[in-house]
Picture 1: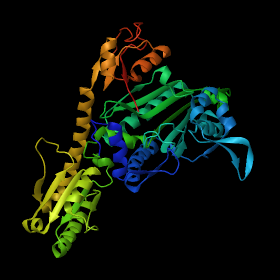
Picture 2: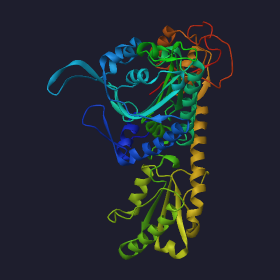
Picture 3: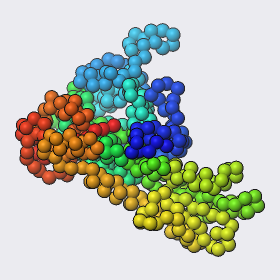
Picture 4: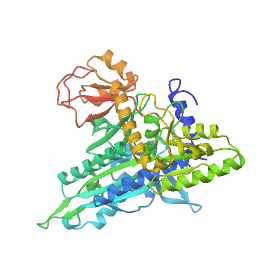
Length: 477
């Protein structure tokens, strides 16, 4: 593969195909998610779905075709999505009376049904989620990161007042930050978007931002407080305790298959994928070593070891079905595909009561392959995998800190965002954001929730800071 230092974009585009995560779809900008890549999504989906249900939300499924008139009822929303919409005008051989939009997101169609289902304050909060595919027509597609069609979940909720809706908005943000850190080993900064970066139709937008290994930012999940904007457009009302009609306050929040792209770019290296154990389809791969009869005996011992490892709740794969491939080829392949731990097992190892274990990355300097007692392998692996998961998170945190700096001068700012993140004061004006983007290609990624309160002047125009703290700027995906 092309080295990251030579062309990070080429490295990424080559890796997602070579690692058998995706193939390119028949329509420009679409992707076929292969079983190995889809398994990563399933693992992420299962954890997030558990969190969503534990918090009291119910899954539902809404149509992917939305009447165009629904979108037009919230003007700012349709304006924000207009360039990305795919519209159906002919169906069944006839021109439709009203064009249908292929779902870019579901605020409008779900708003229509919230209005039907909500009558009293006793119906609130209404907590819905759906797992779905959506379509946003992309001019510059990239697998997982920006594709015309992608998978995601979208939460949509309705509440009595702003306070309750804001609690929901921030709950979703915390859930996404938890998934990013705990599963993807991706350290993210969470906080609010500037007005210029808000979701179309939202009152406030919150985000989690991760730093990729080229220093760019990836927006990995967003949560939006929509106020009563959609409630007004769709008449989402409830009768309060005094019998008066009130507008509901709504939220929406989503995380998509973009997170897989984040995992790839947060941890990968010139050898290929590096997968956190909690998201790895195969946490351990066993490669039997030997030819002919000895090879068959080694494969039988590998299957026996695999069964013992599986009994520990570990996802293990025994690579015993491809006798035409050399062990060296398999070692390189599984390394490229990011398997956290590889075990090599030949009959000499079995006779000596040992197995050779290789981590995808050494968690301790100088730690390469090591031999461990064969009988202890199943009981040692949970700790080895947990240590590797923690190591990846710590390594990514260190990389982010090394490539983030506070800047107060324009020259320092421009230099810093060329390959990392800059923490700088900003005036909050959209025109100033546009000028910064035009000059450096950087945008305000997040107003960090946990940043200290500070005052200063805008790094670009010198006006007073609008946020009372530094904003993180960077180039993004």
